Length: 382
Image (tube, rainbow, N blue to C red; front, side):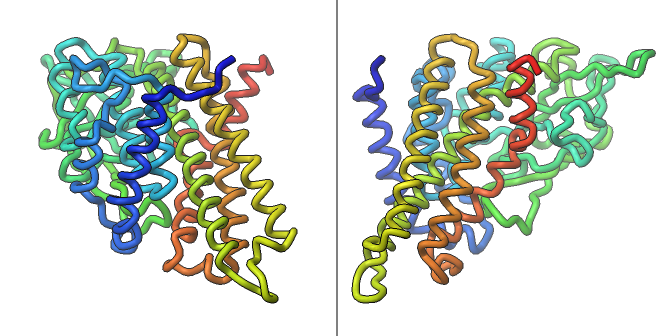
């Protein structure tokens, strides 16, 4: 087994880390404080080639492997969860359904502009009463005279309402059978469609500089050709997309843990108590040793899962494990990093405070830790 990264993957890490330190870190605190989404940073990430990294060049992508993309998300999350969330949600949840299930015409219409950083796309699955239970969808779509008539709403949709968000793939109930079972389909809805309203959500604890939206559909009509994939395959399509999305959330957990660890290491060597740096006290050194061990375990399990995907092996169980483990490690490491900072770790002047807040979503978004355990147990035949 060869655990060495390729020259190209190492270059991607160095390039994205340099970009994050140079372009994102100086403004991250201010954007977080203002809860302000940055189209400028999004465009710069696009210019760096971070959107559509795994897409073939014919659709505007870079044609890279999954691991290269995951490394990019990891390096962004090491500095700022908000910018990492923008990238991860767009690449995995936004672009994913269009690329894997769209017609050639749909791919050519949307994907090239979604790889530039000048346009974003949403994943319209979650509803007020349909979170972990994705089949609790109440949004409906009825085919009338060659058009889908959509009514309902979505909530917590990343990249759903920014000015550069040009649409979303939306799961809707397209039929209810006599026995009460529902048929789910996925439909493309573009910005500006009459009856479609995109509303930003405010007051977030975390990812404050990312765009989170509510979507409303009030007799919203779109052409029949806006169907993504086949009628009745919507739920299967959206859940499959979440398998891929779990890898990017795991990468965000890994990056957040690494970022918190780096800050704790630096602080522990600068902060002096009782005449010496606190890193010289065994209690602090042991904390850092445990943090480093957990991060390395998380990193190599996630990277192996990416290898499974890139080699067309089954990876659903491992993706759930990686998402669960990396998000839980992010929580543990961020908590210890704040502890090492002491009172300063609770102040907004210190980046570790933002990482501590940002990581909290990772145990909830794209399948809670409880749901990941359910997914894993099912793979085990339980």
